[in-house]
Length: 116
Length: 117
Image (cartoon, rainbow over all chains, first blue to last red; front, side):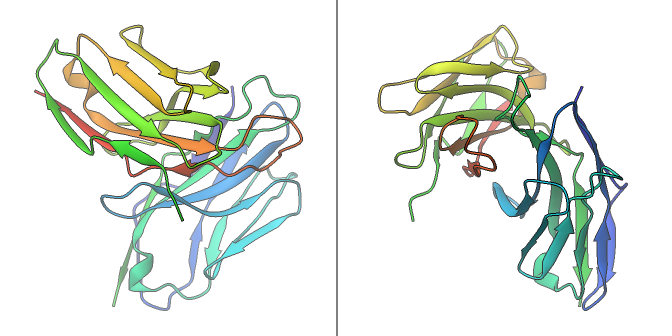
């Protein structure tokens, strides 16, 4: 079945450090890919998305590129801030051709803590 | 801008009791999804509705049922509650499931935290 695998966490960084959170996926169709962020005690917020191969999603300094050849969608940010501390979820959703498109399949989540 | 509203935000129940969670989607959104997030876990898809009809079903126990009403709000009914049902329950809404709407964003509500004692 379809699945998403994220790098083992948690991740602890100093402010202004470079961030990479790895995400790979397995899907039977052609998925759309997403990164969601969850701040403590809150719901999930869409951070960025990419709907086809080689698309780059970006928002708030975060970037991720849809790599079909490596089935990956790694999240990066050049300089993290304390306010970026949260849980980050990689997710996929099948589009045309999938029988269960619409629902999101999430990875395990990566806890990011940024220290001043 | 209006967001997805869930009620209640917190709910405490005893084992074997019933619970009803409510979700009010963003105006004009016709699709609702329910997810369950256990402690330290990723959200798991339970069930979804499009135009008041069930559109997909995931790992939802038989003890749970859900529906979408004419005003597009949805309710998740949970009976014979078990300790393992303690979790954060998210509702998300989006525009339609038509195949040409690739990449439609799901907007999540703040969640209902259910604690079963």
